[in-house]
Image (cartoon, each protein chain N blue to C red):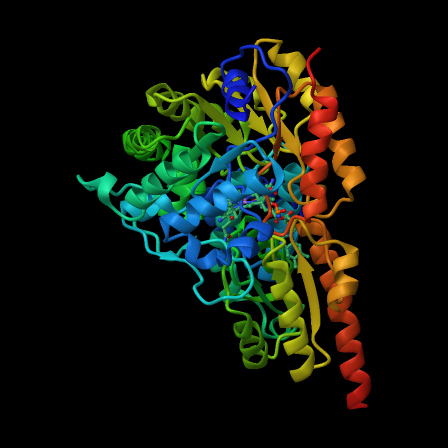
Length: 339
Length: 225
Ligand code: B12
C-alpha cells in the first residue's frame, strides 16, 4: 500500500495495512531546511521553497504526507490583513497578523477576486508542486481556518469573545459571512491538487470558550463550511476537547483530530467504531522534548487508545530532533500493523 | 459594619460575578452617595467578586469570555470609585508591573488574565500587548521604574526571547523581579533563564508577585536606612 492509499483509505474508513502517520497541519522540520538551505521566513512567500520543505519530511523520515502552507494567515491576508513574516529573524517565528481590519457589527467586504489575492495563488502553486514531486505516492494536504478562528484573526479577539455574549447576532452574521470565502479557498486548494483539507478551529477549545458557546456559535458554521468542501476533510482542534468531541463529530468531517489533552480512549467510547479519530501526540512535550523511547511509548499509547491515524496534536515543531522523527515512524510501523 | 453596608458589598460582588455592568455602576454610585469608603468597595466588593470569578474559571464553570465580561463590570465600578479614594490610601499601590507577550507570539489570552488579576489586586500595570519587540520590555521597565516584569510565551520558539529580555534587564537593573509564564514554561525554565518565578495560572502568578514585590520593597527600605 502506498502512503497515499493508507491516508486516503483511513479518511474514507476503508481497509488499510497499518495505521498511517501523517498530519493535517504544518510538517516542516529544521532538518529539511538545512538539507535544502531554505530559511523559514522566506518559505512562506515562495511556492518552490514551500513545496520543497513540505515534501522533505516524507523524503527524510517517511512521514506520510506533505502539507502546505505553514502559517495561519493566508485567509486573513486575502481578506485584507497585513502579515508579518519576520524576515531576517534568525530564530523560527511563525507569521502573524499585524493589523485587524474589522470590528464586531461592521460589514465584512469580501473582495470579489478573493482567490487571486494574497498568497492564495502561491499556496495553490505549492500544492501542485508537491503533487509533482511526490508522484501520486504520498498524500498532499492543505488547510483552512474554521470561521471562528478566522474571525479571531481579522478582528480584535477580546472584542470577538465579549461580543459572543453581548451581541451574539452580530457575531453570527459575521461567522456566516466567512463560510463562503473559506469554502471557496478550500475548494481552490483541492482543485490545485490537495487530496484532503483540514479545517483548523483552534481558537475555540474549552480552554477558551464554553461548550455551550461552541454549540451556539462555532458548530453551525463549521458544519456549513465542511459541507461545502469537496475534498475529504479533517476537523482539527487544539486544546481541551473532551467536552466537545460529540459536537465535533456531528460537524460531518471525514475525521476529527485532537491533541494530547484529549482522552482518546474515552472519545472512542463516546463516538463508537465508525468515527475516524486522529491524534494525539504532544507536538512539543513529547515529539520535541521527549526521548526516542518516549516517542515510541506515546505512539503505542495513542494506538492502544484507539486512533485511526497517528498525528501530532498541532504543527510539527520544526526543531524536532531527527532521532525522534525516525522513532515516530518506526513506532507506528511496529504498533500500527493491522493483522 | 452596618447591615446596609454589608448587603451593598454583597450585591457588588454578585453583580461582578454575574457580569452585570449596569448594576455595578448603580451600586458604586449608591455607595459613594452614602458616603462610604471607596477603597472598601474596591477590595471587598469588586475584587472579592473577581476572586470568585477566578475560582469559577478554574472549575471550568466560567470560560475566557465570561471572565472578560466580569472584568468589564469591575472596571466600570473602578471608574466610579477611584476618584473617591482617600489621599492616604492612594500612595500605596501594591507595585508597578510591566507585562507583555514576547516577540513572535500572538497568544495573549493567558497574559490578559494574568494582567487582570494584577489590576484587581491593586498593582499599577503597564501592558505592552503581544508580539512585543524584546528591547521594549527594558525601555518600559526603565521608564516606569517597575518592580516587576512579566513575560508570557506560549511557544517554544518564542520562549528563548524571554531569556534575552532577562539578560538585558539584569544588565540594566539587577534588582528588578522577573516572572515568566505560559504553557511551555516550567520551574526548570525559570532556573535555566535566570528568572525569579513562574505561575501555572493567573491566581498563582499573583500570589508569587505579591511575595516578590514585598521582599523587593523590604530590600529597598533597608538600603535607605
Ligand atoms: C487559542 C490558541 C491560538 C490562537 C491564539 C489567539 C490569541 N490571541 O491568543 C490562534 C489561533 C491565533 C493561535 C495561533 C497559533 N498557534 Co496556537 N494555540 C491556542 C491554544 C489552543 C490555546 C491557548 C490559550 O489561549 N489557552 C487559554 C489560556 C487561558 O491559557 P494559557 O495561555 O496557558 O495561560 C495561562 C497560564 O499559562 C498562565 N500564564 C500565561 N502567561 C503568563 C505569564 C506569566 C508571567 C505567568 C506567571 C503566568 C502566565 O496563566 C494563564 C491564565 O491561567 C493552544 C493549545 C494549548 N494546549 O495551550 C495553542 C498553541 C499554543 N498554539 C500553537 C501553535 C503552533 C500556533 C501557531 C504557530 C500555528 C501556526 N501554524 O501558525 C500560531 C501562532 C502564530 C504566532 N506567531 O504566534 C502550539 C504551540 C506549540 C509549541 N511548540 O510551542 C499550541 C500549544 C498548540 C499545540 N497543541 O501544539 N493559537
